[in-house]
Length: 508
Image (tube, rainbow, N blue to C red; front, side):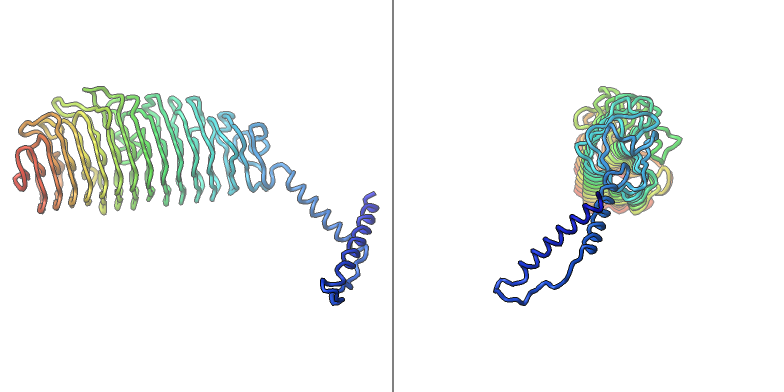
């Protein structure tokens, strides 16, 4: 039957070609210049037909064979393409199309584990308590939706474990489980990872005092870019592990936590709200970054509020918390701390903090400029705090707009100031600073515009010029315990009791 079909088909093709030849033998002008003279024999046609049949069959086989080419994955057939541990199987898969809804499979399965460079596409795909481990290089995950509840066992919605990976335009709305570490996105020891244009809502309703709750974590990942993401996080305030000071591991909770990455954190909208208190010295960071050289934190909007600490209680919240980051640039950010509810207290010593930016050495080449920093609480408070407690620190702070509200007291720890610099050397210029001491005016209270008020060992050099400083309910616009080298000039200074150079106090 097959040979007869070939002969019949060949005969029909010959007849059609002859008809076409006859029609084409004369051009539209009626001349006989264009004549088809080639002869086509049946054997030639049969060879053509055989080639066509073989090509068509091979295409059909590739298209239909499970696990090869382009495959569609749904919640009923996923085990054809992923083994019981969640790893991708099949050597010839080029593109995975995930379609419709997926739910957590098992603790052993965890996330879908993509081990090689394949295309990832999503058609109305939502993943509940299950995400992706991007293990292969050059992967792009874009446009998916992720949800999670407190029963999640996957540890992170997205783990990035490959180089040159991009995660973009995804929506993540997750609740962290109790007594487990949990991250929305975790980047570990990989190069050139990009997290772009994602919308993340992360809620942790538990103390989780011994577990890590970061929305985005990046560690040992050169070339990391975190750009244009919107993060809303409801997080507990937790104790700090002082034994690990200088590493992000010291802080158990943060909106974004970065270590050993020359990160570019740019254009993000980060809102962090403290909703639970766990442990002593309850602490919460919107952004913490450690041991990262040449990092850029710029053009971000950061809002951090503590809505759980009652009046008379205390908490420690930080907008941008920096440890040992040489050449870091922090610029053009808007940071608003505690805009709605205020913690902190004044007792024998002031207790609490709501600092927009905190830095600890060692570091040099640091520049903090063109930021708008606003902070408010019921106790000691600072716009920028930098110190050389761990090691030498050198920095420039310029062209910032700083507004600080807090309650000062009569001792150095009850400090309210725009900029407190306990550094080896600091140049401070072009800043507009307003400090409001809501404890009212009392002579000798620690309310300043620019200060070195809390003593640290070592030499301290300052060049302070062209700043505009106003202190409400305070005596000194510039207050320094000591300076091994000092230049102060061309500042506009006003306090409750002094103005101009009379508002400068240097204690030797």
